Length: 636
Image (cartoon, rainbow, N blue to C red; front, top):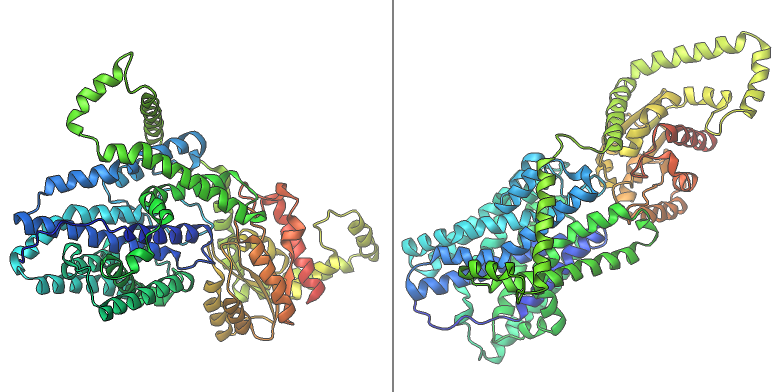
């Protein structure tokens, strides 16, 4: 290996890159359908980690011929562990006090995060990173820290072996790059269209390529060997590459959805290569990109980016669990959440991360003794310690009392209702059964009408005194004969049995967590099989908004059939108004589209819903099913 005695320098522009990455991630979690590629901030963090850690290790290997592995581990733990432990314990304590329905698996979650294997726990449990409506854990985002922790554990040993065996830069670089490419190839091969890609998203094997590309860059582009006196042509070339790569990064933040096939079959790898080039231009002292990414705001945010990343999810999850009108003022609530995240992160950085990063742990006994003195010079700092102890006790209590199943009775009841409905609807979807059921009900209706003319005359007086959600006898008879194909999400699944009871010839395909884009293939398949009726009922938008292109594809799959689309009542999610406004606009564009205004009809009736204020309860289903039925019968 070449001798290199130049001292590693602090690259101020890296704080700017961290700022760019963490802002993208935060915006993705707040407005995932506007900044749909913001999750790509994580690969940028990975590239930076791979570059910086490998740069540190290479410098040590060049200087002494080996790595002091234990010293490396101590430095990493002092830098990263205090904030992680504080976040995990604080979040667990909050759950114990205020969100006990999240206590399930809390013990395993705490342990897995502290030993950096949480991403594999998420894979084993089948957690989804992309389910925007379903119950989300405040620890979901910690998958990336587990991958980094695994990298820190094994990389010093692996890198040392590579240098011992291969000795020269080029073969070391080649091996690292080939392994990175294999990781990206595994991502592409494991991807299955139509399936939730969370297994690929969480896996160390399929995500390690980003860290390894940063590591490979450090082999050929060590920070201590880069010359600051580049000629004009070289400087211009690096600036051009840096500017172009930054522009592509920002463009992909807006245009690379986390569930698209392109993302996993080369898109994320391409993005990471671009991010690696950008890091290279910022790292070079002879280019101007370091200056571009260096300013007081970026420096301030970059230094706190670790804490910002740590605390983003707990703040969002807990805040949105308490505020029930997110959809009414989404940007105001987003600003409040960002403010809380930054405030907590600043406190963590100043009073926890910095002090413990530079603390001499060999003095622990002396410091503890001083803490316990009546007139201790630490004074108010003891309050932080006592607060931490209280949080630790609460977290431990939550771990000890962890329930074996969810304690949220409403969610369990809703789950049971949907499962029961799906079994009922599966039987009702049989065409032969539909014919039998229809003929029996029609015959029964005819017999009832022929019993006496007085009964037929009395129906109008009965309807006058009927409940608001009752259908008239004429409407019931019309519904018996109407053939409908219905495609929807969990709200339709919740009301499917009631709908099929009114419309016995209705074919229903409703799945929990379904997005509008998922329904495109469903509708196309039904059309090819000849299962699309002349009337199509759609219930999509609960789990997130959809693009104009996705809506266009849905309408194209349906063709000239009459479409009824139920709008959304999701006051706890930012996208409610966006979805409903999109449907209102679409109704003016497509002559065969009629929007059923379930939102307007149900908006002031919280007693119609479960605690989530989204899915109609048993009482509300009467209004849900009859309102939809009346709208269809009136306009079909």
